[in-house]
Image 1 (cartoon, rainbow, N blue to C red):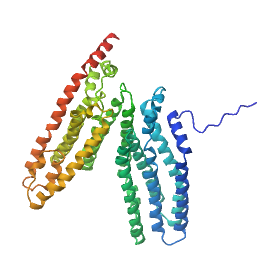
Image 2 (cartoon, rainbow, N blue to C red; image 1 turned 45 degrees about the vertical axis):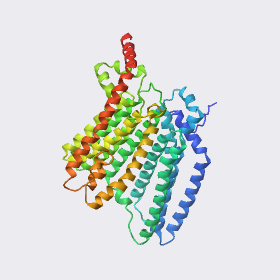
Image 3 (cartoon, one colour; image 1 turned 30 degrees about the vertical axis):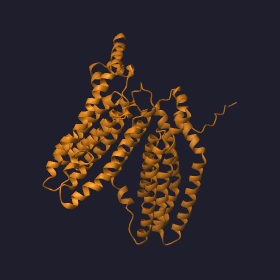
Image 4 (cartoon, helix red, strand yellow; image 1 turned 135 degrees about the vertical axis):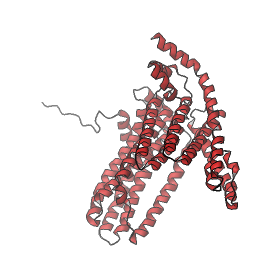
Length: 473
């Protein structure tokens, strides 16, 4: 008799967390409802576009429905992915297994990304039908479908990272409100394009998809963003003895250096330096919201590697203390490359922007918020509060000065004010204003350096214990 191999839905090589989340996701009514409604609409649009003269309008609606599904509806499935686990206490059970925090977070994201990919593959026959009926650029349409899936995967990683916050109102404020307005804006955009498309305005998709520079740069940044958001989420649920910071900071440093090298060696210099500045803010958000680590085994892992390990400890060890030094290094790299390329003004504005982020980190450590369970929550709340207050003050104070034709010198007091005050300053005062704003903004990294030194002294017993552990081995 010949033995019959058992039928399985997923291979054993897949992570058990991915299989668990994917099985649960595919069985939900939400996924089935989205799949059925999407295909009903696509069938309707395909038949309508193939049998009438308004093919351009139908194609625009076709793109809009797919974009809303892949970039809004499916990513929102991760809204409570981690928060529900935290409230139910099931993460403690998962921690008893061999699954790390990174694999748990990756499994939740991979489930949403796989469901989006399944929907994207199911849309391909309709893309081919549109090519046959309407003579569209098949390669461009398939490429844009990939970009939409990739954009949805990045948004899913962002939403999962924010789902580590237990507060529903915070997740609704940061995720729900922008997604709502973004979805409404996207819907309005496609409606307007439907009108202009009927008037003969061509679609820009094919020209965008055919740009090789856009492809490689966009895909590379998207992959890094996915890694960043997933590692940010994993840090929030990882145990204190985890060395996840070593991996993520090494990747961040490598990506930033690659961007700066490409920017310095090619004609894309200013654009890539600006992109590096944006990535730097995200890295600072992560590095400055880690709790000061007091677990001896963490420091022992660096001491075991000799002099090199003790040197890397100052930059890669978990905690906001070393995170501050790490962000200082990255800021110096970006500002230095910008200065070397002859963009002194942009370099100073970037430094002032970094000082604004260090100001928020210093406020978090000065207030009782430093004892919060997760520093990301007070960091976001203080950032939103500061942005709201300063934007209101800017509209009330800076705009009248600009209308009167005078320079608002008081804007140099806070780093967040300096770029707006610099933009509205008189041409003869711009250089002096920028120098004064840079000098005053440097107070905040100095203050944060003092706070980090005091916090570093409080972790001295843990480092002494780690040193004894390595000596006794």
